[in-house]
Amino acid sequence: MIETGQAVEIIGVPLDHGSGRRGVSMGPTALRIAGLREALRRAEISSRDGGDIDIPIPEVRDPGDSSQKYLEVVEAACQLLADRVTDALSQGSIPLVLGGDHSVAIGSISGVAQHLHNPKTAGPPKVGVLWFDAHADLNTPGTSPSGNIHGMPLACMLGKGPESLTSIGFPGPKVSSRRVVQVGLRELDPDEKRRIHESEITAYTMEDIDRRGLPEVVEEALETVLTDCDHLHVSFDIDVIDPRFAPGTGTARPGGLTYREAHLAMEMVAETNAVRSLELVEVNPVLDDGNRTAEVGVGIIASALGKSILH
Image 1: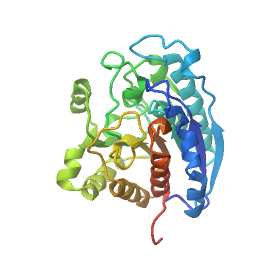
Image 2: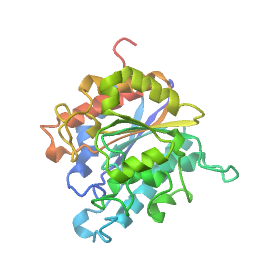
Image 3: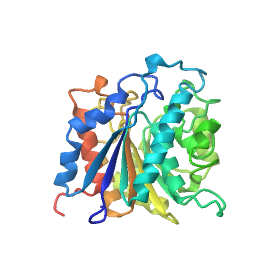
């Protein structure tokens, strides 16, 4: 739940260069058409929409190095986004980033870190990252099977990746691995598994959720991510939800969160009163059934920012 009088700043990022599949660039528009502003208004959340970042279509750009496709476009978009996020935070607003593919997280988190950065303090700022995703997004150009940057954002934020991405805002890591908690993982590459085991990342798979139940997992995840944390950033990839409920995404895999589990997780997040920035990514209307996935996304956003049944 956000503070009374605090505004949400909506920032659209119609980027699909990081995903290798067209359509996800229409995600911000789909979320707006699904009634985002009205949902926030009903939840008594003040919002303003600053529009979309201008991004060229892939057809007019060379993808370049096949291990890090469209690097220059992703870098430019994430730099613009980082500046927009920093500006919103400086004005006391909560940035709400609408993707686009998950490479936009490089810009979102870099903007948060840039806002909090103190060059006199060693190490990255105390940004807690709660990452809801079917995938770990911990690949680098050297390990990625596809070369798609949407599989690399979290690695970049930990300082592992193309220098042009790891240096947005300031050089080096933007978060510490001990302040990263991932929830809902169900498809990992071998190198991502190794990176998780070799780091201080806290990771919960769908197996953990099935065995222990979602409330226990999310409660523990929140306790971990909020320990010694100055800013909580929530990154929600719609593919963490089972495609029965949210089919419109490019990397849909069966076995994800149910509709109610996803809302409960966000309701528990909202109850902490700690969310200071939020992004929802990977909604692809081209693959959707009507605009059902965007409608689910709007509900997820409202729940994360404080909508409840009785309060």
